[in-house]
Length: 404
Figure (cartoon, rainbow, N blue to C red):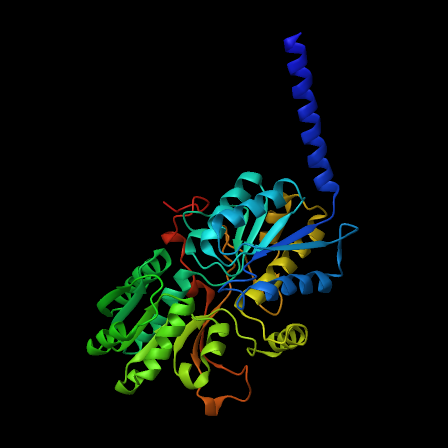
């Protein structure tokens, strides 16, 4: 009797699971944006990422597989436990097919592992850890925007080749800052330069005067800020306040976003060099999208906004081409067809999940060079995709097959 009851329970559970799976496959395509809606990343991500996804859905026509496409979103509050709990509910109970944006790498790591276990898709448009396509890579994860390898490689190697041989690094004493500093040091020495010194600052540091003075005293050709967000903003403000650029040193913000340049203002940020994957004023296609986005959001789109649109748009094209929203079929189709939109021109998705688009070397304009409040970058050089991202022979992604 006990065996019979257990068998019936197992059979019922199997039927329920099968029914849920079938219902999920028959349900509408459901896109979710997990982002920072209220914290320090909200301007760079936040409501703009939600609306970028909405724009992609609208431009696709609002329907897929004969049903209306649904969009949901939530605030992860930059807390890994909050983000993971939200993603789990979406994947397990709410019928969400794909999660986009995220932005915060600590949140993203948990979601990447969950998505792999659940065989669901996740697209990173703001989270910058190169581990998403490295040791933590997943067949279900794709990185659409910048990463820490690009930040550390594209600009430093080029400046060294042009004569800025000696570097001094100011790094945040947390995982992102230290990883970025180490990658930058390797790029500088690999290009024939030298790191004359590295100094760490504690989390929550706001006064950078002593660090900047030590960097200035080093007489390095370039001073690199390996921290990001408000740390980079405060350091640039104080660099300007102490007029350290007058000594001929270049200030390099390894991770700088347009929202931060806007917060600083051109008189303060002018001359700062950095690398980026996106600028609204690159060409006619980027300007057309940016102007539409501005009308809706009263701000030009950031890197993550452009990446979120591109990711959702390409996903929907793959769903249509595949004739199903089955994640294994769709992810294969996403890698089969090229990514084409205002953000990416006929690029492929590599086996480690990296979208192989070009990057750019940029510099903040002087006030006299600017023609308007959002005219803030000079694009100095385009960097081909193969020189922007970690080559596969250096990859520690388990999905990558090594020759030999």
